[in-house]
Length: 404
Image 1: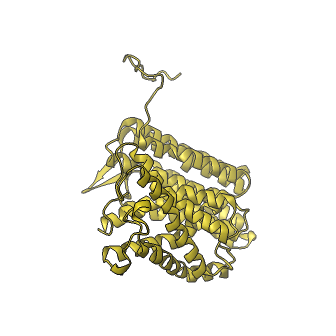
Image 2: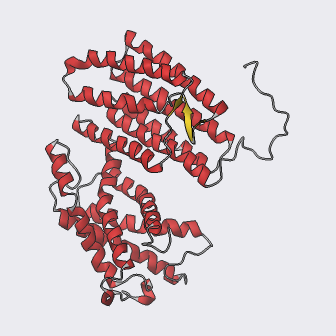
Image 3: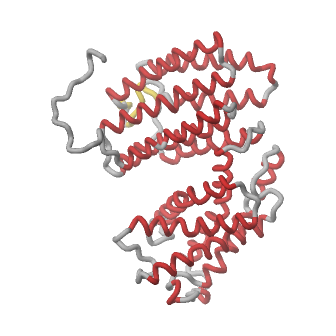
C-alpha cells in the first residue's frame, strides 16, 4: 500500500456496489471486449486484425467524452476510467503486437520507456487535464493515442516490402518509439482533435485499412473481417434509405402514396416505399462497382464478389421493407398510431424499429449470398446503431421528422 494513498472519512454509500456506472462509462468500458478480441488476434499472429480492433476501441475512447459532455455526465471517475482504458489500448496492446511482430530480445527494451512515459503522461493528464492554447484547448504533451497512428503505417509498409527490410523497420520503429516517448512527457502543447468527424474518420478509417490489409496478407477469416463485411453490406441499404427519404421529403410520385393496408400496417407503409426502396437500394449497390473492381484488383474478395450488384440491391431493399411489416402489424394491434413512439417501454419500441429491418435484410442476404454466420450476426447487431446515426443525420438535414 502506498503511503500517499488517500483515506476517505465519508460514510459508505447506501449501495452494494462501489460506483454506479452511467451511459458514458459503458461507452468507455466497450474498449475492454474490443481489446480482448485484439488480444486473441495478436496471440494468433493476426496482427492487422488486432490493430483493427484497437482502432474500434479507439472509437469508443474518442466518443465517451463527447457523449459525457452532451449528456451532462462528466465526472472525475470517468476521466480516471478513461485513463485505465488508454493504458490498455495505446500502451499494453501495441507493445504486445510489436513483440508478436518480432520486436524481441534487445529490440524489446525500447518498449519499457514507451510504456513508462505513456503512464506518466496519463497520470499528469488525470491530475491537470487539458491546457489552454490561445482560444483553443490543447494536450499537455503528445497524447498516447498517437502510438497507433505511428505504429500502424510502419507495419503496413513493412508487410508490403520484401522481408529483407524487416531489420531496417525494427530500427526505425525503435527510433520512432523513443522520440514518441520523449514527446509524451515534454511540457509543451500538442494539437487536440475537437471534431467528431475528424475523430471518426481516423478511427474507422484505421479499422477499415487494417482489416483490408489483414485480407491482403491472407490472415484467416476473423471477427474483424466479418464486422467489416457486415458494414460493407449496409452501404447499399444506407444509400437507398437516404435516397428514399429525399423522395419522401420532396413528395415524388404522390400517386403511389397509398397505404399497403391501413388497418394492418398503418398509413406510413405505402406502395411508394415498397417500390422505391428496392430500386434505390439497387442503385446504391451499383455505386459499389468501382470499389468491387479495385478490391478485386488487389486480391481482396468481398461478400458481393461474383454476384449481380443490381439483383443484390433489389433483394436487400425488398428485405428492408418486408422486414418492417411485422413490427408495424404488431404496433397496430397494440393501438399505437403510425409514426408514434409510446412513452411506456419507449426504448424497447425504438430498438424494435431499428432491428426489424436489420433482420429482414439479413435474412434476404442469407438467402441470396453465401455469408458466414458471424457476418449475419454482426449485421443485425450493428445495423441499429448505423440506422440511428443515419436518421440523426437525416433529421439534421430536415429530411426526416424525428431522429429515431
